[in-house]
Image 1 (cartoon, helix red, strand yellow):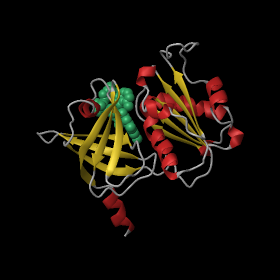
Image 2: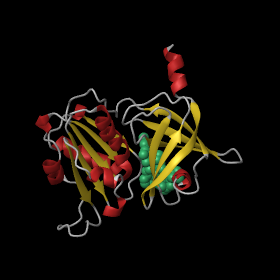
Image 3: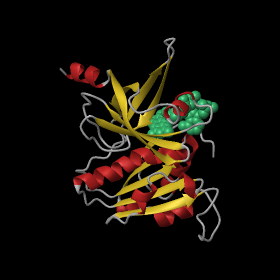
Image 4: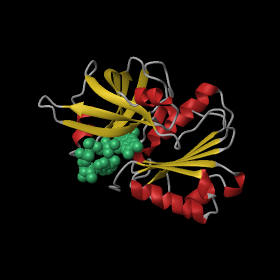
Length: 247
Ligand SMILES: Cc1cc2nc3c(=O)[nH]c(=O)nc-3n(C[C@H](O)[C@H](O)[C@H](O)COP(=O)(O)OP(=O)(O)OC[C@H]3O[C@@H](n4cnc5c(N)ncnc54)[C@H](O)[C@@H]3O)c2cc1C
């Protein structure tokens, strides 16, 4: 029976685009209808498969951006210049068009609403996607777990979920770190996340947070090294790598 459940969960399903909205000038949130979707946990991802008229296929992973909601599944895709799949999903791909989706995938980089431990989220660029799913799952479940988000990105125009993260939420602190351009009127200089950033904006190690770090490979490795240097237990640090760093 367990085998049936696993193969059922990993079967390709035909999904149709139900809604799309621009998240930034180069990122698009896509809401799919997937009949028979089995549900998922915040932090998990899916595989998306495109098939061309000549039968050529391309497959990529995308994190789920929102907690389970019946047959609805939400992703946010960043356009990578020249990218085979992301350029299509952020461009011509239109409401009603099909795509194949398989999942949910992943059992370690997940947050469960019943977990009361404080949570530290560290995002680099589009690495915010599975972390907003955790923030949304916390809200949907009425969880009182304390959350802190440290979100690194190049410029203010690249903020995903900007309105949502601007609204004050009890128990959720948000810190932005800009690497190339600061918001108008903000003093200081653009910088990358460093020891001082996490020393001030993150939970201290002895507070016992579970930490989720997601973004380009180089970003994730740097942040994990800083957390270890600050005394965080390696078993409490969960990472998800999206691919090469262009920053
Ligand atoms: C578990 C997981 C979850 C992911 N979740 C998301 C998500 O929620 N949103 C999202 O936008 N992406 C996500 N990604 C990245 C995604 O899978 C693709 O790698 C990305 O969309 C690029 O695919 P492409 O076909 O457009 O580019 P490709 O045609 O594969 O590559 C084009 C060029 O871009 C470079 N490149 C490839 N991937 C990246 C990248 N991630 N960053 C920078 N340069 C890159 C390649 O080296 C190549 O030079 C996730 C990846 C993983 C492994």
